[in-house]
Length: 268
Image (cartoon, rainbow, N blue to C red; front, side, top):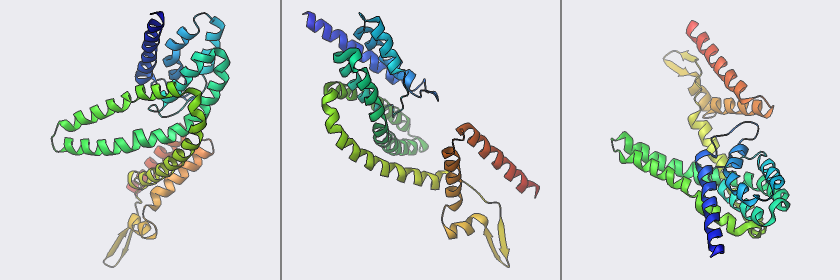
């Protein structure tokens, strides 16, 4: 009877961990630890229970969890499940392995999660919902909300899979994750390339006139390569970010240059 009570208590704690992650996991995002603070906050109910008789172990566990963490919020529950499974058995002795696990898995799972849980479903359901809403069908909004909730609720089964698998699954995951990550990387690059060409708008305020022929600057450049200006702007921004220029400064540069060029065109 005592064992059943303990299992029931631990299940409630696991649910608290997931509820905290779903609601607050990504809300504490910052440039120092990214999702590290949210990860630690979500894990606190488990840490409190797991180290209730070991105050020093609790401090060590919290410090370990406060490290840098950044992955797709939808796939993080898998890492948290494996983390809980390892700490439940190994306590402080497993913390070094937990730290290595988080570092090793958050990158591959981010590549997979961004494609499977963000790009694909948001594109499909978002397009359908938006089209229905534009035609006055309120179900479009409802469908989008329901789809978003269902995506968030995948946290519970992912956590359970991670918890049951624990360290046993890590050896087989290495090969599987490598293949999935490569596939997700190719898909991600295709999506980014398409977004750069379709979503980045750069207009060249230049018009060429020769007799009855009139051509705009964009149409001339598009004959050389469609989307040449958007590609050049994206490449320049990527270069600046690669040189460790802060994103805020890059945004300010784009704004200032855009306003200045538009003012020059108006004055001309």
